[in-house]
Image (cartoon, rainbow, N blue to C red; front, side, top):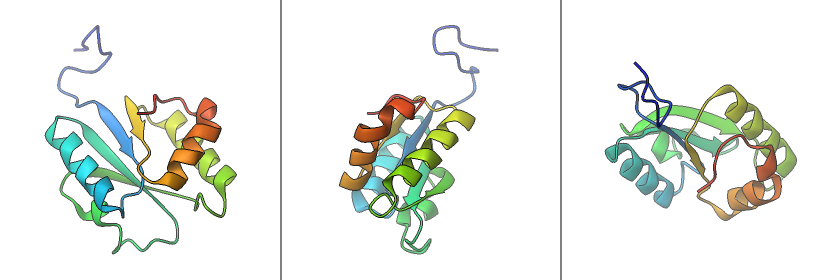
Length: 116
């Protein structure tokens, strides 16, 4: 059964993508969204160890995604995110760190997801 207004199946949680899973404020975002009823995918740049990416290990993280480092490869990071967003439906994407904010501002037109 699908909710006509939201386009979701009645029992499905809306999905949100949060970047910078190694940042403490990223973890806080993941926790708050999940507690609010969202299914949260956490993204983090390659080069940051999985052990350092605290949000990856949170019980509130439903899925993980790695993207190229936006500081050294901003176009590659944008392309990886654009492809991911084409393959997976999200209600919103939330860039947490300054580097990712810049990627979303400069390349946001290629993303198929609203940015918060």
